[in-house]
Image (cartoon, rainbow, N blue to C red; front, side, top):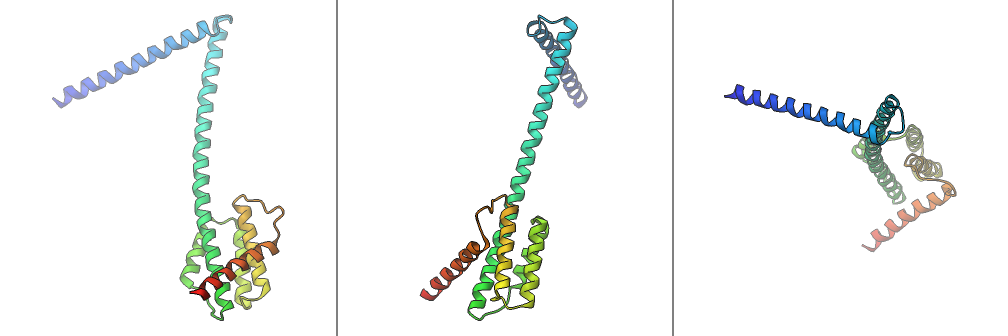
Length: 190
């Protein structure tokens, strides 16, 4: 019984493929006879094949571009999350040091650095390494550390495709300090 049902399925599949082939043949003849009727029959067949090849190749290229764009979008989401984590950790570090509390949560920092290894642009990683070296060698309140923090932010903006044209480091430093000061004010109210 199973053999008969499999045989019927195979025969039915072959019949469908045959009908598909015949349909393609007649469609091809229809296109070459009606669309390219003014051309020589051999030239019209070649033209139809070229047109079909061009259409299929353009569909393949469009599909590859869509897939590539989805991959880029997913990568940018992961980068953005890592970069937001960077800002949260380092702004917290600057705020804590302004209140005479020192230290960085090692677990948070390790997780951030894993994310940077996976997703960050090489220039962002280099700027971040410089920031880490400065922070290890000096106090967090040192202006050099804050300036390097801003350099990392500038590289992050470039990596995300944002323009830094007209945006200088001092403005980002003021914005960063402003958010820290605002956070301090809301904490003192509570």
